[in-house]
Length: 129
Image (cartoon, rainbow, N blue to C red; front, side):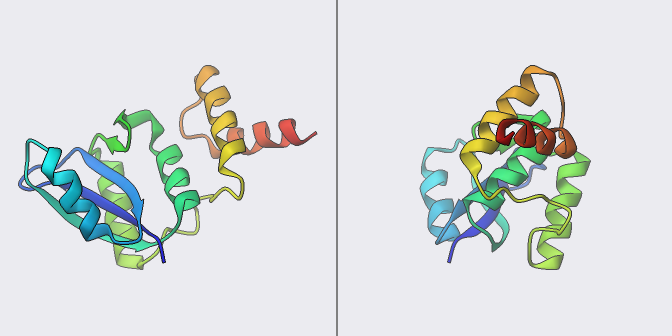
């Protein structure tokens, strides 16, 4: 079973890595080898790459590089809420077709939309029509 995980440097607020793995602790150890900082696992919840994609989209405006994000107050609150719930919150729209989401996401970024899930949904609807 895959899990969406949250990792950050020990003793620092961020950045926060949002990833997906069957064995998050093994992933932590693999990432830590290349990190200049010791890392810690904030936690993980059940979820696949589609759920990971949705969270990446939700915080796309604070993405630093790859799966690393600035630890804004909003992201920190989201991580705390997610871990307290033990799942991705219901308000997060999880894509059924990540490839189409990525195309729509690129279009939304080109139109300068930030974290606007309604716009993303409209773009997907436009593509389907």
